[in-house]
Length: 290
Ligand SMILES: [Zn+2]
Ligand SMILES: [Zn+2]
Image (cartoon, rainbow, N blue to C red):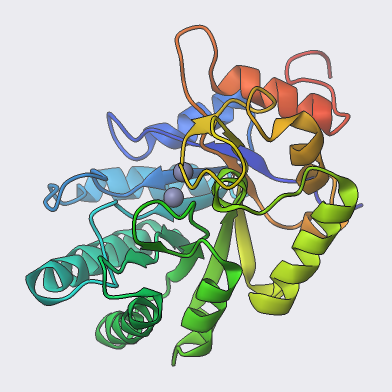
């Protein structure tokens, strides 16, 4: 029998990194993503040895869980000078943490060129990725994320990510994370089945489906082509259930874990979004029977 499709969420690590595993089990999800450090700070206290052990032993007894990391927002591999050196240091810490926890993949926003131009930005990102891999052997793979195209961010076109990988000396340690909200905001229209199919063919021709290791399944508060990155609950945004359903039911993506980074509000959060997604896939909601 084919393995069950893995669906989950970005989870909080407050109170200890292992807490995310407990919450995932409670929700009944098969995959999740966490930050390994405070996502808006350069400095974070090191992970405690006993927290790492607790995380690893909990994961071992729930080995079916697929766990991913997301890097902090300050890292800019398209930067220069002091900012780049700080990014390098932070990224090395993130990679060390991922390896310590046994997390196989780390999602990275490729970078902001800050006026230097997309081509220069792509060159820098590729060179700086070569440098980080050569200085930090380890195991963790870096997943370049598709971006919405806000400001001078790189990665709003599949060709950007394809070019970064193409120029890399460490292709085997790179992959891609596709965010449905980001590509929609960037201008990719997949509102009907034909457009969706063309999108996947386009992705395969540029980035390659073999490099697609993770999907961020998010609806969008903003319109297609708005270039504004604002996540919305599944089915409640501009993309809608119909178009998000194309991804969920696509056999070509069956093996790829789907992570939602949807808002968590007092009366509507992960449980509600999970219920919607399971219904879209034609599965019964969790806890509704055995
Ligand atoms: Zn992201
Ligand atoms: Zn986003």
